[in-house]
Length: 345
Ligand code: A3P
Image (cartoon, rainbow, N blue to C red; front, top):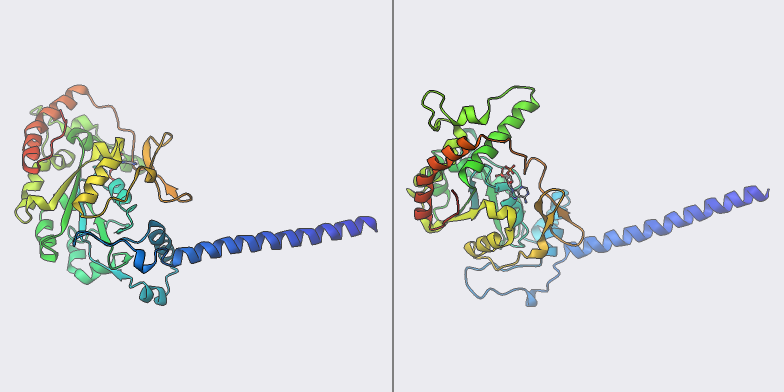
């Protein structure tokens, strides 16, 4: 009897305890949601731009909270109306270069409260089928944003695709264009590594990098190899410069974005006429990953996927030297045209 009573008491305590914990969790979630859904910053005290081009900001938490709700599909029509949420065409595009660090750059810029990223590569301007779908299709692929925010998308294939500069020009001739570059030989090896991994995943064999990058007949650099061609940055840039003045481009140092991202991001903020909001707090080095990761707030942080930061295969040093010599004159031209110099070999 006593044993039965004790069991009953224990059961009651358990139910009571669960109710208390449940209520506390509900309250925490509710307060968090309310906090996230309401503009934290009252209208009067919101940032007022000193320069006409600057974009007013709400707080980082506000943007995170609201967009978090939107991502979860929780945005009601009411919220969309209340916050004037819109799908805007990008005001800046990361046009390349593939394997330059385009994903890291997009994700890091998205830390800025006035920036909203299109998560997927949209491939509107480089894919004829998509392009034929029209500009409204493109706009429809853009995330919801507050009217003062700028939308950024990245599709690295834009940089090397013939038709793209003209198509982007037709959409917006004053758009800002971001190009992130790495030392050309390293970028080519990174490009190769990505393809190699794809082949290995399908249990396929693939050539060695050396055999692709060097023409066996001439022993010269094989300029037909796409990974080599993509690294001749100046050749591609020339096509873009037929449509856009050089001031409309900003070159990001992809090698520095790996080792010390903040100064690179601050340069981009300035280029986009945004007040400097990304800080060292938002970026922390993760020793396990070997890369900087992103800290949005005390709770939410993330590193890039494992497909970013692959281990490269060893490449014959003589091939590396040959490639570096090959790229040298193109690099010089690139420095000259863009006004940004790198310490590439
Ligand atoms: P590797 O895989 O060769 O190391 P993209 O996004 O354009 O495909 O570029 C991928 C490259 O971004 C990676 O190339 C990696 O070096 C670089 N990168 C820069 N910052 C990074 C970060 N914080 N985390 C992971 N990769 C980063």
